[in-house]
Image 1 (tube, rainbow, N blue to C red):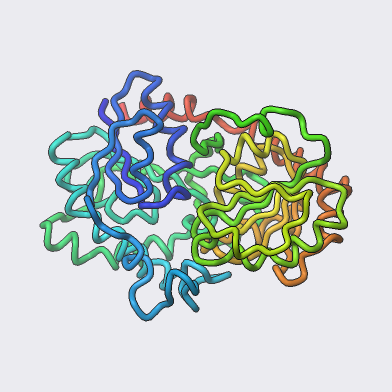
Image 2 (cartoon, rainbow, N blue to C red; image 1 turned 90 degrees about the vertical axis):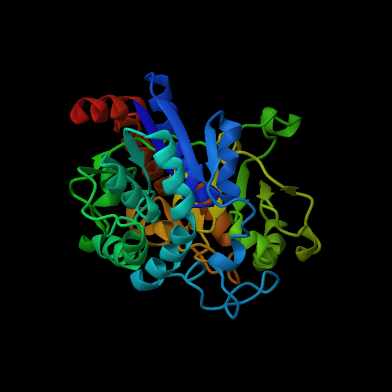
Amino acid sequence: MRVLFVTSPGLGHLFPTVPLAQAFRAAGHRVRYATGGLSLGVAEAGFDVVDVTPGLDYLPVYVPQGNGTEAEGPTGHPMFAEDPEDAELATLFARVSGVMVDGALAAARAWSPDLVVAPPLQGAGPLLAAALGVPLVEPRLGSYDSGARLRTLLRAGMDPHWARHGVTGEPPATIPLTTLPPSLTALLPEDRRTPEARPVRPVPFNGGTVLPDWLAETPRQPRIAVTLGTIEAQWGGLAILGPLMEAARGVEAEFVLTLGGGDPALLTDVPPNVRLVDWAPLDLLLDTCVAVIHHGGSGTMLTAAAAGLPQCVIPRGSYQQTGADLLPARGIGIVAEPGTLGAAECRALLKDERLRDNAHQVRDELLAMPTPAETVGALVESLG
């Protein structure tokens, strides 16, 4: 069977799909990606990939003129809102998906896949599956893309592309998947749940690296990871970590801050117990940590949950605000504003046994979910 993955340009959209793609390939199926931008990096995971938007700069697609600058960060933009409206996200991703449709459809028709896999916010996925008359698998990446209303609004935003390509009807079958464990799913608002979604264990994938010595060795002190992902970090967001840098001086721990392409000059007077690294695979880093402070992205949240770590969310820099809503309610994390995040929160991450016990419970829930390999076997059997 030929399986075509269609993802939006961004590592937060790409990385969660790779373990499923690996499982398809390990089961003997051929896998190809159709994507663009940063997601072309999937070639480094050993997959064939078609660049559906060669040479395109996605920054003005995500953030059109008038919504801010790269240096200042966009103001009021749904990419950065703490709780963006479904209509805003649908408009944003209809625009992103729209620029990818022509190239993705051409790639699909040239390769003739038997199955299309696309997260719900990649609006080209259903169009391709309908045009080719093949089933669609929709892996939800978090709580933000699980709601039926958002998917309906995105589908409406894609209507002009369906019309100009003469595509009618719907895919012959649409199979949703969810990576959220049961106890987190139960905390979602009713309109964010997908009862028919098949559970699949979120196996962390963050790329590979030759391990530097400091990451291969056992830390001398308890280690706390700090990350803002890549989007907020590159738009000047590292500056919001100033109060944390000051507070770190009084905490008996080592902090590892991944810069994510951000400018370290925005951080002044970094204390000696803070290690700045441009990038490290998050799953490997968290293997050496006792806690993590992050921006609330669903991929980061689930990677930390798989490691069984207490988490602190700074609710900024990600429209994927899974963590800020669910972590405190489940008792596996806390939420802090960047201006007030300090030693007290860090010590809670280090010493609160209730947080740690609950985090271990969620890790065990994830381990009980079907693996990507088991999910692929069930999908292939159900599709005949």
